[in-house]
Image (cartoon, rainbow, N blue to C red; front, side):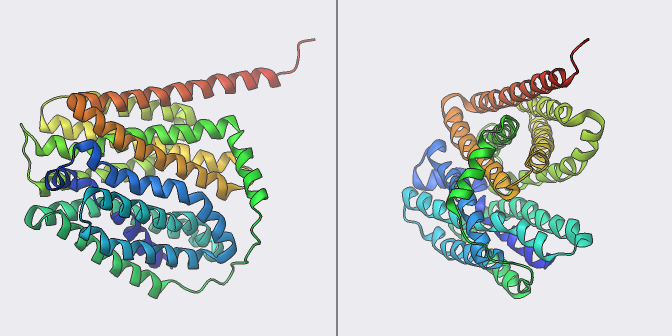
Length: 391
């Protein structure tokens, strides 16, 4: 079961970000600007953001395993078609459909594991799925970079598609039949009421916005970094540009240490530290030095993953009911941030170079700090309200 979900996570995130490392080549081949080509990433993450909530509701009725299987099957069919796209418009449209289909995997995977895995093994099973996400996102970018260097972006996407098909077949062969799933009747009004309740909760709204703003920084930086490193004065080959994404491993460490930071600094203290680390990374990345750019990416990645770990875990801790919908809303905000960051970062890069992209990131980090400060004042006001009145 763990290996099946590992394969599903690897395929999902290898496909979701498959064009990100290839954007300079797509721009050159299709005569597109950076901002136009960035839609090949933003359309996929936007499709996932829009469909993760309704697909999480459908999984309650039709089953987690069935929904994940159908979602992966549709996404893999599209993956075969993506390298054949005749123009940028067709490529963006196919990527949007692919992202919408892939939404069924994160919408169902955690709930499936929670139902089917013994409590003692649950943490390990979820860890395998998250590892598949991380490795898929990283390796997909690296593999496409090196393949594209030799044969172009279309063969690179074809290779990722074939690897993902193999992962999809492995997922279906290994996934055990569900034993504990009980179909529930869909009650759209009840789901809508639960969602509306979450959207009226000030703390949840702040957490959704924080996750979205952190991802805006991350989306902007990693969508545009390929353009910067492949142009003068660096002129790095495509394979080396793709290998920059190995910095993602820093995020794995930062996510793992986020719990210890929260124990020492508290949730808001860790968010302040994450925002400061991300801002420092943006500042360091402004230098025209490859070493300092990589150092900046390390800081940005560490700050983002730590902040994301705190915000996402806080959603589960805050929602007392309808946790599946609360988590789906967070994922929606998270991937909307990714889409927004990719587009705005590319537009800013086209207008003002890397300084413009860093400015977009800095504004998003400032929003994170402001939202966290608002939470600090709200918590202080709540404590004062609960103090007994003086006699």
